[in-house]
Length: 137
Image (tube, rainbow, N blue to C red; front, side):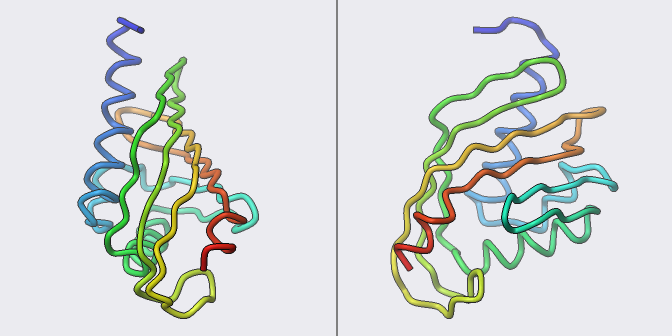
């Protein structure tokens, strides 16, 4: 376990972001955790730049999955990066990835990597198991 205060502070930012934005279903709070020039890398979903655009993405995501819960499995911090392995559960109540609301429960694995700059998230790589999500919907 790391005792470096900078690494612990970075982990705290990433954990709080997941808790407040996703688990408490408050995507409007994303702006409090990201830099104005944040870039979200979503793999096959592409890249989204800017706090307002990332906030919009999160609003639509949480809106489609209003009971979303991301449970931390592992967390590692090194330099300005924080890596969190998660298990995510939710029920699809709205349009998601072009799929109309189904009412189905979904569960998938995710690995999120956050770059922390000046106490905020400046970059995120979201590696969600899209195949698992799609097969359950």
